[in-house]
Every structure is written in structure tokens, then in C-alpha cells.
Length: 291
Ligand SMILES: [Zn+2]
Image (cartoon, rainbow, N blue to C red; front, side):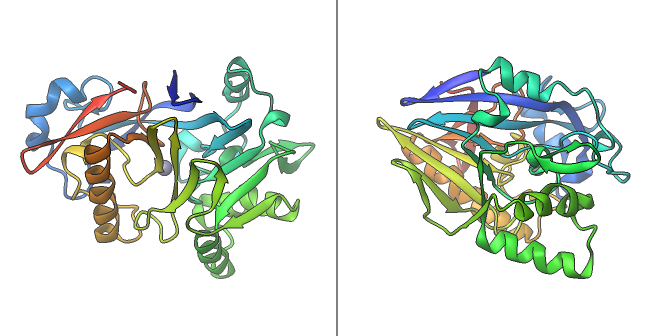
């Protein structure tokens, strides 16, 4: 899937497509309450009969202002994730081939931006070469929020296996290679390309706000996991560090998007990878695709 935002071009590069999560992933969720939206949500985003949410795990390849930017790097290959069978010791996934089909070799990536440091957002930061984890994108600057990095470095002192082991195999190697640049709220990557705070899912999650030629978008990571959360913004996930803050961040995102037409580009929307929202009564409705 490819779409444009002003003069910027975005390709959705899937790592895992059709990742099913039980409805309990959103602990407050009542699937029956979503039945009026069944036509919108099935078959791509909710399996009502199976009681699951359907997500993609995908990187967003952004070409803007002469830069090749990869937003979030998914699960990756050869990573030991015994508590997550769909993520465990994957091989021959075709991810880098799909990146190549979009016209980008690993050496051509200028910037990797991880919205946050969960295992499904950092996996392709590294790959296994001769038994060692090496940066997959050797020329890239890896941008990581200062608060986000500090938090997980602290957690890793107590538990080196934190984030399913991704801290050790997907973060430390790029830090040790000197490729990480820590960034603060408001960091401007290029004209009209700014990193902004989206706290709640993790304390230090950040998004990438794009404004080019009058078109607006926000790459918002896991501030919105599933289209279900556009319909019910108060339903935070069970893996959110601060569910109330996550819900407040989500509502603010949706209000802004409904107000000024900002395109939402979350990390896990299947197929089109993006949506626009509009107000409907006291809530929001969404229209998939760049529109
Ligand atoms: Zn995620």
C-alpha cells in the first residue's frame, strides 16, 4: 500500500499480517457494543465470531524532504520470544524483500524512528549476522525519545530480559554501534516533520507529525492500536503503562484529526494503514484510507 501526504510518500511494509489478539486485549471491550459497526470492522479488523481483533505489524516507510525514514521496525527475524509464539524465532519473513520492492535497500535508510520500545516496534533494528546482532540499517540515525530510552534502560537494570528480550537483542546493539540519537518533544527532523509526545501506552511514546504542502498526518504508533479505539477511545489496552493517560492522548489525537483533517497513521492498522476521522454525535467515526 502506498499513499501520499503533500509531497511525502508513504509505503506500508508489513512484517506480520493478520496478527490476532483476543478481545481481552482491550479489557473494557464489549464486542456486542460494536455490532452496529460490524460492516466497517469486518473482515479486516475484528473477527466477531472468533472474538479477536486483527492487527498488522508493519513499518511505515516515509520519503520526505530527501530523507528515507522508517517509522517502527516491527518484530524482526531470529528473535527468541518464547512467550509470544507468533514472534518467536521467525525466518524467511520477506520483510527486507518487501522493503526492496518499495525501492529501498537497508543501506538507503537515513532515519529509523521508533515511536516506543516495545518488542513489536524495534525488531528489525537489528539482524543476526554470523551469530551477532548487527544494525540492519547501518547508515541510519536511530531516533528514540529521551524519556522512553531512560525508562527502559532503568527497567533493564532490574530485568535484562525486559520487553520480551528486545531490549538486549534489538536496542543495545544499535546503542553500542553509536547509531542512536535521543530526541526530545518538538524535535524537527525536516521542515514540516516534527516529533511530538504521545504518552500513555508507554510513558515516553512519541509520534511523528507531518505537515507538507498543506496536507497533515500523524504517525501515532500505538496511541491507537485498532480502529475499535476510534469508535471507543476510552478502551485502552492491557499493555498500556497508564491506561487513563493513553485514553486522554487518544481522544486529543482524534479531536485534532476531526478538526483539521489530519490523517491518522497508526502502527497496526491493516491493509490501508491509515484513516481519517470525523465527529459523529459525541464520538468519532472513521473512513479508512488516505481519502
Ligand atoms: Zn505495537
